[in-house]
Length: 432
Image (cartoon, rainbow, N blue to C red; front, side, top):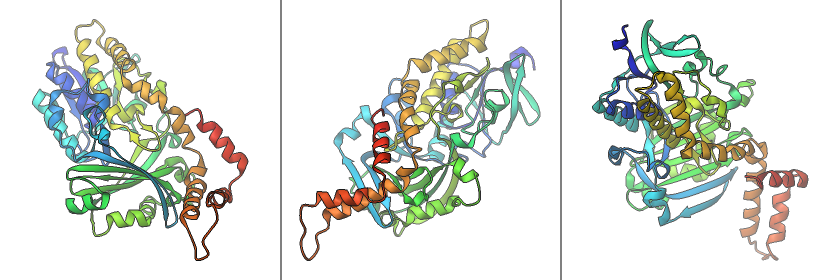
């Protein structure tokens, strides 16, 4: 191709990061192409969850006000599950619904399709069913991509192809996905009448709930479950680290993990009478973010999941806001470098400055200690069991009455737990 036929930017992946980048570059008049391997944007995206808009307020274009969000989250809860028992901490607060702190549940199939329409309206070319074979690497620089055997030159390439980013691997950014840095997420969408959803979760019309669960339903594997209320459905899923699953045949299969979560009585009650309309599995980043994920060669900007931009705090998980922010910042960097003699290097430097000056790298760094702590196997069996046993003892009064309840409750909580291990875990938790 001649220089005049070179794309300003080639974006690999039509998810939140890639499409957010495309909107920025296309509206600035840059020749932008998005290569999406699915039949349409969103068709390969199975995550069902929430997006935090508060951190994005300074970055989001005005058109995001019309995004197809499901429900505004106004109720948060975290549950510890052990057998048939569940101990839950819950928060309902008007503060959660304020613009500065708002988060919304989303269905990615809807949201990604809508965002692709915004990118096309801005002037981007969104090319579905386009599988990128590899990047074009010349003298240590990325100068385009190969799609279906055809070379597509581009001044800058954005890797937004997810946690298993083959583009980043092929460009030499990493040695390939490692099981210990990944997790397997399995999810179902269960349809229910909006009124029943609101009754069961105690919600006002149009408001939503988010619930995180941890307990023995993961069979001792590091991970947890989630419930998010949509307009007329519930997203229910389980996420577990991939490396224990990959070490042998003894681990539970993905559908068994989800079945175990749905069998928790408190969860089963919320889903009762619903119809499962979708089942999906997806690999997501799980390990703490590593700054080296951004050490890409000139011409390549990794964004979103492809750069491992996920933060698991235990009580909530963030990834979508990082994806959107990194995509927007990548787009802004590419636009700012359009007149530079070395556009690839200038874009990379501007992108890194943008990330460092935003909430993205700060919040990812803050989550490192929590994500390391969450690998503790006692969080996925002994501690939920202790919490449920202690709560049961605390509230139980038999025919003969009972003395002061805290001592027997404490004794029940300590049953089967090493005092030294508990102390060591608390000592580590103090740094979070």
